[in-house]
Image (cartoon, rainbow, N blue to C red):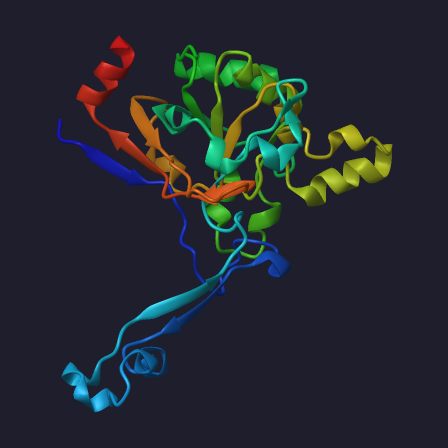
Length: 267
């Protein structure tokens, strides 16, 4: 079987509902015909018409949060500490071995928006697909949000992973997870309603906050998860190396390669 790649990443682009408006990325494009003012200071006396076809360079200026686009969150994003009191690691300190491992997909597309996934839900889904978790496997969660990317309701769509569901994975050795939703947790609009009713602040970001007890990373804004089988693939998601940062952008991909899978299983 030839090696196959499945792109699991969204675009970084303008004017698409990938984030709340105040957090959206901005990309300014400089094309071959409007970037001469950038080049000219390097070469006094140069005229644009002196260049072949009068074409200068193409360059983009990008204004981003580290949480725009498909990205990997470090434990530092969740809390100042991890592993019950250790200093939380930043994205440049994440163990790269966590970022290239066999993947497992849990399908929660049938769950309603705002649903908080439980440990029992995770256990039932693993039994349904016939998979027993192994340490360091990367677990990605397919929610309804994946089908709403680019639509106005994307940020509020999909189920989220609760504290006990997250701990279920971490206690079995998982150290990197992912979702096609805007957040690993349930969408804020739904959590806000529950908080208003109960006043219980432990409901806020409960899946993220599991990192206080066992340090882990997760991917957010994955894409195309419906193209994956439950297992039998590798996830590659090395983050950009930003010193001291809470997250880093990644071109997450799934790799289908029997030889690599066999070598990983052999240790």
